Length: 425
Image (tube, rainbow, N blue to C red; front, top):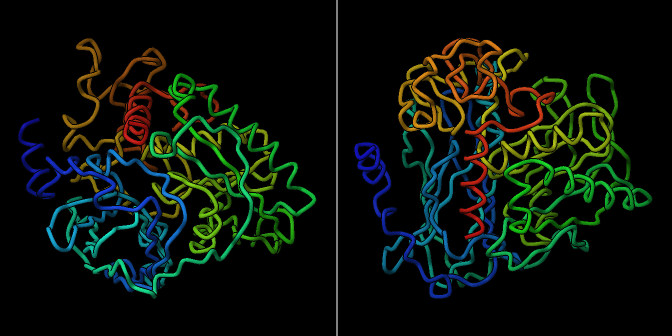
């Protein structure tokens, strides 16, 4: 464990004492949003800044300003330009990175819109972008200097819609703030959206560890109508004119319902303080998706809707990986066998000591046979991360593996609790 800590500090110098940051000395209680374009293919990628925006709310912590969890495919750090002090950092993932593992990325180059957010700096700041290399180590990719007083930083709202409280328990800086965005709800259906938000809030707090942490969450919805109901279903030639332009068949996977309209998502979310964005799609079709620290999305009226909501939020909020291995995913070599996944609930056994090893009783074999006799105990079960062999999960069953299951496993609960504590401290 000491060796892991030493390596971590070498890769991210300054993180060991970076939490000693007085928020008000370095930041205003607003958000700086940096929109940029991420372009490339399987083998190359590049960044290009598009624009900066000043948004009226900051929903994040004012205490835990640097990300010591280092989840995600990407990472950024913010240094005060004058002093050089690290004042903010965060890990995140992107739809672009998922696309880079598809067959299409071998044949063509594409551009995706992406965003990072941070509390608005009082003084000029240097923002450094990182991505993971083939050994899953973060390497520096791009640096951009923010002129905090620039009159080119846009302050206006592109989408100005009212918000409503689903559940508000306190100061956004001391809570996990979820903003729920409506997709495919017409003006006449916004009453249904309000009811759906309340229903999904009730569903979330039926499950541990959310149930015991209910008071640590603020949930708000945005009342923003679409012209048409539903979402695009390209294979059925069904096209709906909606606010966020979501679509099933993302990467030609029928049930993967996502959007590439990143700026629209951010514009709409800016009407409330948030840590997490959740898009609720007005459709009975089974589907959803999530990108860590970007957005989560699911449908509202499928019979599995509540469980889909819970599963996808596990990805978007707690950085949990998929524990199933029998789906027709579009990804190739999503988890390299010689590197340890960054997700807290998956392992290739390359660095298993950094995962959930301490929770496994001596009586449980490692790897653990995929037999029902081991249900309910922590183990190391082969099959996860979309493949049958080489990637291991922490339990025989879990909501992150099978929506028919009725709880998160011990490892996933711990990961969720860690994230709640990080945001709500």
